[in-house]
Image (cartoon, rainbow, N blue to C red; front, top):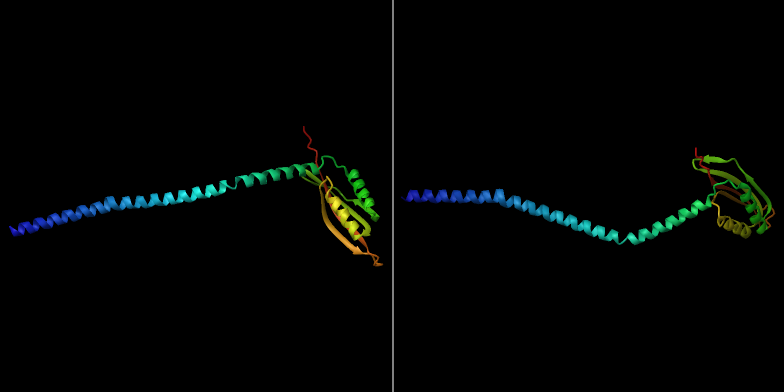
Length: 182
């Protein structure tokens, strides 16, 4: 009878161990893995939420930058005329040179270059005057209502060291090509 009880206890222990092992293997471990994946997903969502929150605080700044860029683009469009208006531009440059008492003026347009929707006209300018007069001339050229890109500037002292400077400049002006509808 003792042997029977010992066997019965061993069987009970084996069944209990099998039940515990089955519970751990088939119930506890899958639930623990699932809990860890839920925690990781929660942490990832919290990171995403904090990132979105930080980025949403930047929206007013970005909106302001967008408005500034739109204003700059509007000004850019206005600075590139639809017509060539080369003669008018050359006259304005000559008038600016005269206003600043620049002498020995030479204003010479180059060959027009077509580049898609924009056309460019290089213009070579040369004059002689004081350095402050020339810098004031450049400041006024930059303030023109037409887009002017200064590509090359050469300033050379007068041979007699009189304080005069000979300026040679190459600028490019732009105008929009008229789109022909047909």
